[in-house]
Length: 408
Image (cartoon, rainbow, N blue to C red; front, side):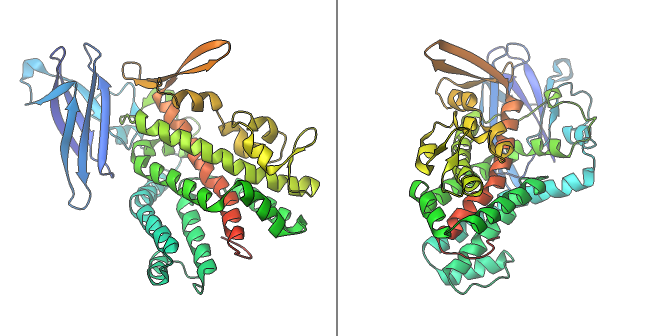
């Protein structure tokens, strides 16, 4: 559904038309520069998916006006939070139509896109509820909800219920990490090998939980998922690139309509921090495999679990790149971006559609700019990888709670 509306810049009086696609979330927030003076115009919409209905919530930098008369034909802004917007958008076609043939299999992409929307907006709230029932030890409500989520295993005790919860979380996460089955098989094989080599699972798990409180880790991972689920509609169109044909072009030819930098930078920092915590579990498992000890192997010598945990995240790749799991972690740890966007001086420039940030060290200050769409791509890529390496965290959580055998 497309809604047309008209606005007038408060600074220079330039009028424009907005063609806004009504999405799946309960909140949409768009921003663009005035075509004449460059001042940022930003507005938000409230959506009620149960009705369905929508309303314009607030607007900054402009005011809504009646449809202009013919001599005042406005500029047109195509605003669709769930589809990529071509930079050279022309004519009366919608962004959905223009980009619909970029995937190799458009029908399969749309099917999986709909599942991801359903998962983020409908399934995730149920998984949060499941966690509440587990924390309160309410077996009756937990079991009912687990069956509603189509879990058909035993629910005889809380170890069974933890296995059910981890199954539900992995099933949910699978939809957000397409085309990672080979890496998933690698992770499962390494965990299984480490457990077969370890003289005592208890010692391995005890050493890891001494630096990784598994309850805190679980909570941290849930917090990352919650933030991503809320912001997923604004990032969802980027998932199309995983399904693109080889000749589909470059992401640099497109832009995103929703601008949510303030929220997204927090999500990125939290996701990266949690991702690096999980890397400690993975590296320790490699130590068990390579040297038969609960330690992290280096080019020369080893680090204890606590020592590697204390290594700055920006330096962790120096150790991880020597391990067989390097490709799971190293390409996704960008400490310069993390430190830059985590600072209050980072921001979004609506005129260039870029984010800007700075890094400070003893040599001075270095300034960076990055297209907004590429920053959002970085978030999608690391979240996709987070859901993959979650398998390491799920293993530790399960073993720490006494769950035996295959976990998921």
